[in-house]
Image (cartoon, rainbow, N blue to C red):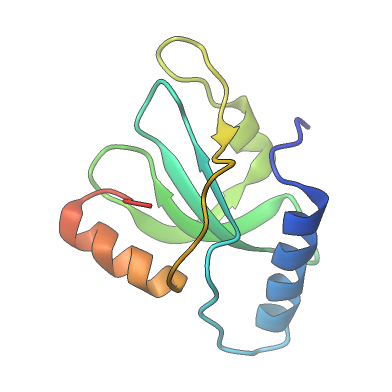
Length: 115
């Protein structure tokens, strides 16, 4: 699998996933933003499943006007290509400024992730 998150981001996301798996109700800030540079897809991810670290949770926007919270496969994300064939990238400059629920609320109102 292509590496699209750093070791530090992976550790943070696994820690969040462990908290969720333990039954804790959390609303963390997104750890990583992934996007297609030649299409409208964006993912703001907060955690990884400790039992299956290929499965991430976050706000997913495929650019169709219906962003939603849910689980995604990192290996599937890495296989996505946009209109020009470019792979998914990590936004190197993304710094979350609010919890995931606020990004989700904003996305529901605008029809897309704005981060």
